[in-house]
Length: 140
Image 1 (cartoon, rainbow, N blue to C red):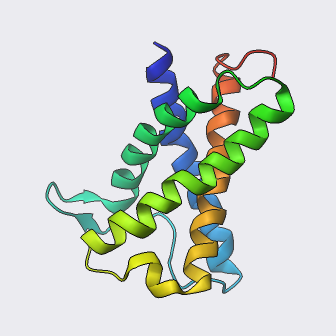
Image 2: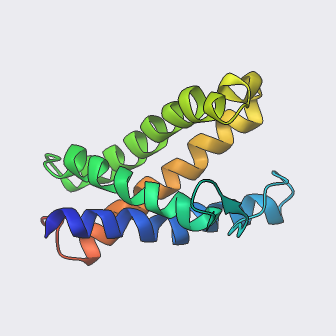
Image 3: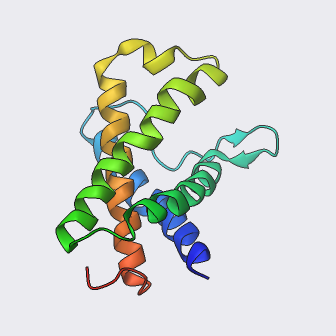
């Protein structure tokens, strides 16, 4: 049951925190990328935002495994932010981008790298928030 909660936390965090942060970045002109993309993704032609949320759910399980035993409430939130920002960003920039025919690490463009860290950091905080909301986070 805890893994289902962690998946749901990652899924919801993608829709609320990650895409919310992207909406803010887009509204302020910091990125041309729009949130909540409904563009179909291969091979199942699922809207991109739901494909992203699915993977956010998978990552949510992994993040929960890493932060669940944080020694203090402060560490719980710090680890959620730091690991949420770094781990998915590394995979996206160095594995997913090249698989999609994009340059590794966005071609080294600082805006892409910083954007990934900001969006995924927000997502990590969201996972921690939803896990707390679901009663899975101990006294944090």
